[in-house]
Image 1 (cartoon, rainbow, N blue to C red):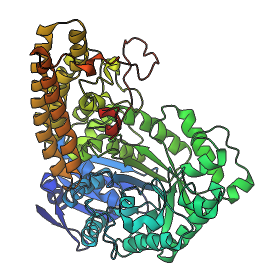
Image 2: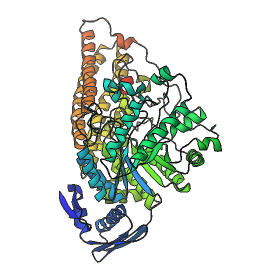
Image 3: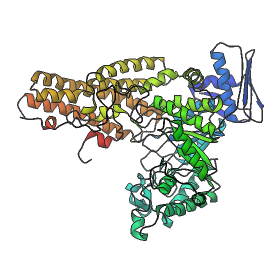
Image 4: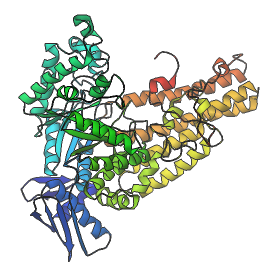
Length: 621
């Protein structure tokens, strides 16, 4: 680690991959300007004028870029389009990032120009007096969060808590300690003093831990509010009224501790329209606007849309509801082991253009980790770079992003886009269908059951995955410090090369009485199981390079299950061939289309299914 003394006396310790930043800073003079930044390199010396610390580090990245390009001179002036630029990291879906990884991420963010890191923590932080809150989930201790807060502040980044005060708290409800605050599903029971005592403990914990007095209170996707214990106790009440009262209580608690609040906006739109988040039937009157508290910022989140009109309509509606509106887009790392970066980039370019048009001041990019946090934390770097360059430079073309990502992360933008390859099957060409990630169900589906076999193109998939494995392995050798990302997904593709069409071919051989083919396929099942072992080893290295150990046990179970079922398939085929069983009933079941829509130009349609529980079996889990 390299030490660097800031002018204000704050000591920074840079991760080894960024050691040169501290050394570079010694040769850079810092000055002040009212707004924006100006970076200058002349005669081997640098000068940065800026109004914020995060802009200083972005200025360093420019000087670093010029030096790497062999230039002796350079000058760049920039001003940010968005007042706040935030990355929200998911710390709640099993993959809880380690403190050391987050410090490294913070340096990359500072060089890009981010001023906020938001920690999405449903229950993964320590609350005094509540031992079951986040127990065995990799929760952060107060001391760790304070350490992170100090480190972030020294880089000009505000560490912002992002909690849940209504829904998405399913993890705590497995413990009897929280039965008194449970409404139904993952929803807190509103109107109960016990509930507000818990929420106050949440808010107090963060007030005692971080400098920031900004907090995201969540409240998204709470459609079942008032439908469980609340309904039994109080009878039917209008859900919007329930939510309004609950929100006022939560806001008053936050105000008590000096917090300014933001929240996800979807529930207002759903409850006001009686339909979905993007309903076009929403009529916003003065009466409707009066129902929205003006002391909370509404965050319009959209990770899907690829058309400008949707963003314009939604931002316009948000502006009619409130004067305080922010936007959150997505760096798709929540659809299995491989990301959806090309889709993220396409959608984000459109979304950020609309944010500029509507003068949105608070813009964030989210890195969720649904269904187990299977994808690498670091895979989001290209999307983070895009948001930063949109904010400061209004440039998001690939050539520009390639230069800037190298300057800020030492990594190749083009190589990172290869991480999409496991999902970009021939029937799902770049940028891929929205939220479609075939690699996950191809890995987890049972070869004997073949639930997804009608959506497998046996003629093209194996060759695709073989080629992808090779390209990812080559990229691993080019990476300075993220080679593990590429090795992990190369190993995944090696599994899928062998496994993706096994079920299709087993059933055809069985129906055709081709005993020779069945014998060969039984051997292939063992080869696939061996490759799963190698993938699990690479995945373990990746997990422990980025995350705390809690949560890895889930992937151990999942991948161990894939291997076990491949071994079972080998045994079932062998038993049949050697006369120990007369039938393989699993292979006699018809294979059904799960989605009957057509995919023009292709004979198969790849699907969007991100639930391990649904993929592995049709039986009860």
